[in-house]
Length: 187
Ligand code: 5GP
Image (cartoon, rainbow, N blue to C red; front, side, top):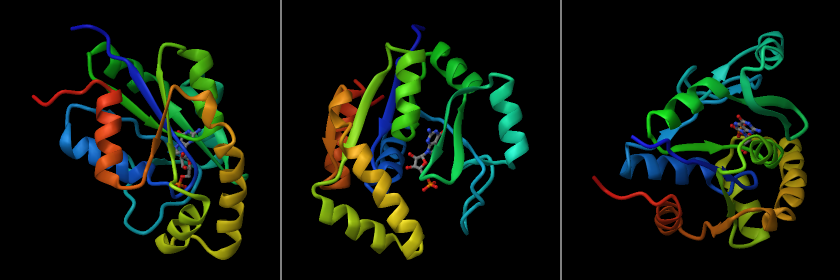
């Protein structure tokens, strides 16, 4: 089987990257979604090894120092997040379409390391809608929301670096577009 192509999905906080990638997975179970390592503590309901590998700072640094991360970044000026390299390469070699859901700095590193990957930016319909989704999700306090919106302004300005921009106006529609961009077909 031919080596698959990697798809990187980036976009600002609360734009719905998680929802869209979960929708892709639900409809196309053959898609492999990378599980990142993070120094952020788990939120209620998050499971180690499923949503993230939750590690402390020393463990994260050790992974980075051993070259085990395809990319990593400090996100929202706080915690470190990184993509374990081994599983990505294994899945691609096995011919499985792989999807990474990461921030802008991470996407730039993947672009440098794997220029053949496909880079997709998920954009909000408007700035107001992005703010509304962040408040509506209710998982961050006011200070953290402000921090995330500051990052979002920077990320939105980088939209043109991406191969495709998908506006997440409606999840199912945005997913349809991502599925098409990834060249997925039902089996
Ligand atoms: P959260 O803390 O809400 O789960 O994630 C915050 C942000 O971290 C997300 O918007 C996501 O793009 C980014 N992120 C998650 N995993 C990774 C990763 O492995 N690498 C990078 N660079 N960013 C990540």
